[in-house]
Image 1 (spheres, rainbow, N blue to C red):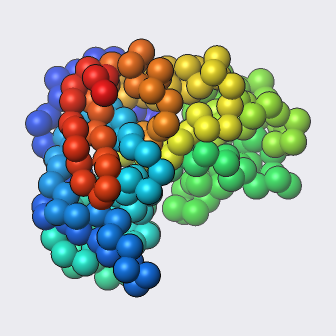
Image 2: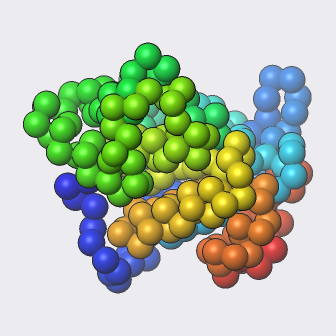
Length: 239
């Protein structure tokens, strides 16, 4: 993580994500989001909460440009997703790291290779890969597991590998989709603590979760969705 910013610093009040009048209806007729307006500033840590079917998945898919809005405007990290052509989507994705609930590690690659894969995809050279992967694994406390295979790791360790993979290209934005969904409560706290530490270094974090205990304990901004609408937007972990 050669260019992760060290320590605390003054945050710029500059939106890294902005939704203006965004609505999304699927071909099935499902109204997933309705007239959503939201700004998430660079350097924030934001929890996204809501019951199943509230619109959380669609919200995240629109940010990653897996789906397109029917109406409104979406800007992510300077990219206008409303007008974005398909060939530009990989450029958008390179500015973000994504952490999945189900880990999505490549089973026939060891820990080091799984993290390095994210750098190979963007054409990094071998020396940079060795340096940055080593740093990323050290940050998540898995430097000693670099040669281990995924099936030799606990669920929590696998998720930390996923986090290292998301971090290794020094993204501006981390999107974590239920990253604690498949780990025990103790490891859940460790994962969110790591994300919080990464956020303190200057990376914006957007995390979907069903775990209200984590939301209350970590006291970050909370966006609540219900019926495709934002029904609450609170600082300090208040639900």
